[in-house]
Amino acid sequence: AKRQGRNTYRFFTSQMQAQSMRALELENALRRALEREQLCLHYQPQVDANTGKILGVEALLRWQHPKLGAVSPAEFIPIAESSGLILPIGQWVMATAAQQLKAWRDKGLLHLTMSVNLSARQFHQPQLPDLVRQVLEQANIPAQVLELELTESAAMSEVVAVEQTVAELQKLGVRLSIDDFGTGYASLTQLKRLPTYKLKIDQSFVRDMDNGDADKAMVNAIVRMAQAMGLRITAEGVETQEQLKFLQALGCDEAQGYYFSRPRLPHELEPFLLQDSWK
Ligand code: C2E
Ligand code: CA
Ligand code: CA
Ligand code: CA
Image (cartoon, rainbow, N blue to C red; front, side, top):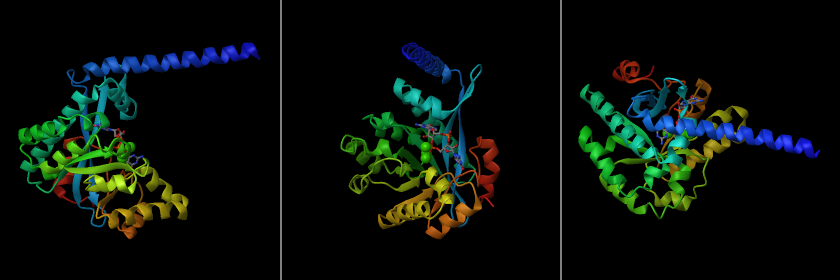
């Protein structure tokens, strides 16, 4: 038993070693990803749940490495966060997304909003409002069309510490969305303290609606709460017409998901944007 135990332990450590080797390799590669132009943004439409009209897009980061191939954000974002690389990368994302929106505005799409994901690290930078202001000025877009998406857990950790930042962002006029809503631990009190514009129901809830009444009741409760608080509500990860029908019946404002479109490159998405409605 003892020998077996030791073998198990050895197996375990070599697995951990392989994992941390991979993480180190990715971190080193990520350091050069920006300058080597390996990063790009895809955009996924956010549509009016009732009409299918495209209201905005969310920028989603993609990394294509010559040897490692396409690395998933689920793998490299946590590494970018722990290494601090998310600060320059996040800044690049915001600036690039703003420039893209400007290009679309120049083609007449003045109503279109741009959502950008912010990591907790970025949110806790005291200079964030200045950085956002610079991005808006350089792209020459109004603050109201820029939405910053913060995960529920990032938004609610140390709400007090970011109160100043939040107040400045609000004064600027950019909108704040709470991402992955329902997966964190936001209390109503915390939620009330943040000038939130929109809640995005996490895709796990949308997926689980197919399982039956208890999960539907959960989504129903989130929508009712958002309505009571005067917040807009978006359902993420909508993949089927059944899901959309149910979300419409509940009074969800917006929907996003493969049912409408995968995230796409700007030139792939543009015809649909100019056509204005998904259907
Ligand atoms: P998220 O912000 O919750 O983004 C939604 C994720 O769900 C995206 O995955 C999107 O491609 C995927 N998705 C959209 N519709 C559907 C659907 O109908 N079904 C399913 N199964 N998935 C759908 P992606 O692009 O792999 O991004 C994963 C996460 O990485 C994002 O989750 C976000 O937290 C993070 N992320 C991506 N880009 C950035 C970025 O620029 N900055 C930061 N800080 N995080 C980012
Ligand atoms: Ca998001
Ligand atoms: Ca989300
Ligand atoms: Ca997510």
